[in-house]
Image (cartoon, rainbow, N blue to C red; front, side, top):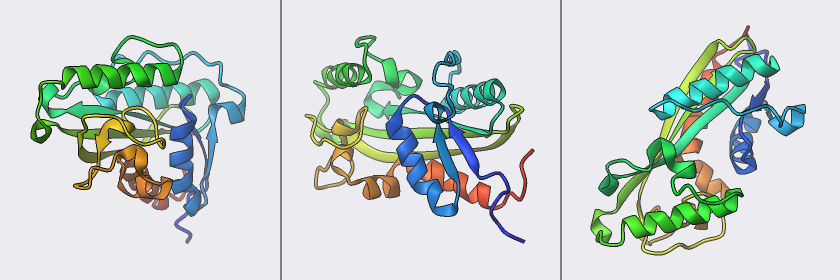
Length: 213
């Protein structure tokens, strides 16, 4: 019997094309067709209120509500940055932490500026941080099929570098050489990132499913 599930088409519930592409690159290798909301003509569905206090709760809210709204299998994630010196902030508020900006690029820039300001008095050795990604896969009826989580450990640099990635990637130091997440290639990021880890874990779950209602 094949290890590939009968249902191999999944809609990723996000308006962020970077997230869709990262997930697609990993799941496509196992024959899963990954679609964005725009691919199924439902980009105008109001986003659910993400009022959970954890990444896992918010991922579940998005996956189940979108699945029921569009009657399709949906994969959703909630991810963010947790900085040790800030008590785990910005956490679930990562995307709009600064409260500034209209476009995604403006919000990202404002968030990064706020992070540098908050850590201005913190020494290099005390800037430990991690990216966290929680994923939830829901069937078309909203039933939770699987949940996974991934983490990417590093630290926060003193200045932004790199043009790849998005969000806090230009500040996130990934190794002793000082490279930022935004300086990694797409393949390198998928291999090491929190979203890559969560997606690979989800791929392992999918490989064990023979049918999904």
